[in-house]
Image (cartoon, helix red, strand yellow):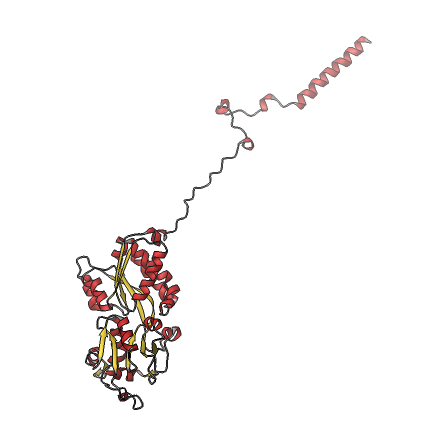
Length: 363
């Protein structure tokens, strides 16, 4: 019996050893570790902490125009020129100061031609106000200065030249350009223009020869009526008005206003702003049946409409930030102010062109 039990136990032990050998892998089947296996292995990727996210540093956005704000600049700004542009520049200077400019702005009303002399011949001014484009001879004068200047043009508005008579005038309501030329040259009495008009001497009032308004009037009215070789002639037109009888010239438009309002037989011309200021004392005369207003000035149907400008120089604008700032302010705000002065806005396209010229000048 014992012998049989011993045999059974022996069989069970052998079977157990066989089963153990089949279930466990042989030690020789384990992969051979590389030479570096003795190093401490890296932790599994899943257990690695994610790298911290670093947000890029972004510099605060700055307004590139901030340095040209009225409150950011100081110093002197010297302007001179057109009596027509004068009230507009005066208003823009007031606004510039209201917005924080603490410096000084000088604006002299001396006429366009005299203004270009100060800007291009003597180099005294930073900005030249003009009711016409600068002439080639004036540009040449700018190049001859000790520090040469290159005029940069900025369109700031539109003027409709007003032909005016006294509020007491009862006969003149409309004129043709041809009649207007005669009124300011060869005609002596109103009846020379129309037999139904009074046989009274014409009293004439005109801006002076330094005025861009005078230049424009000669070019638009007198030159076509005084042709040479069948072409409008500016020297002949200028000679005709300068030789007219009973005429008074002045660079001060207020003097012209006072002269015209003083007699029912007087007539004058000047920028529309001065007529607007004196509507109770003066009447505007239509030209060719068209009265001056924003629409007729802009589309050219009023034959005596003209552009208004200011001029400066790139070197001046760079050396004097206050000048650059004033011009920038002028261009961006002028259409908000110009009609309160008595002129008409330039189109936005023309203002944009002027702003582009400003940007180019400061590069």
